[in-house]
Image (cartoon, rainbow over all chains, first blue to last red; front, top):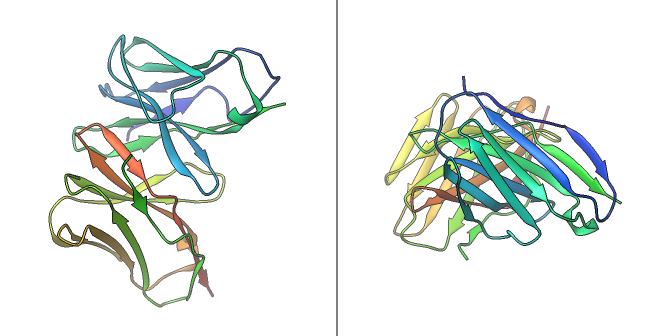
Length: 111
Length: 110
């Protein structure tokens, strides 16, 4: 089974803090994704990566950056957290059959 | 921006009935289609994928795709209370970008 883990289930940060969300997968998949999920808006793609050190912007990259130094690890960085970044953050990977597998999610609250 | 539309619900069905969930999408170039189930407070889990027109069955689940009408649906037969969840439709573009609907909440009443 594909396993995708995320560093924290719940996180509370203050406005202006730099926040790191980490995601690790154990299936040697090339592609990894970061989404945020908000009520009524569904899942929206922030960034994805198709290889080590390679990244592409998704639909809502503003205020975020990413890092992929190793194949199994994909980090999402909030450079200066703001209250409108309070959300559920989901990491995912994709198999060769284009099936996405999600991590358990990190519920981030910015106060 | 690609649009994937779902009725937010809630859709309420009695136990044992067929639940029918629908999804429309805006871009005719869409390649692959997926249904995910998401329990409250949990992450989405894949139920089914479908790539070509017609029906695809897996146990109590049937996915239906009509590319001409840009429509994909999920039927759940013999619905159980444990099927109560939010169901997300996802569409794949360019082999690496997914667009998700906002989900339909299903309630199966005992």
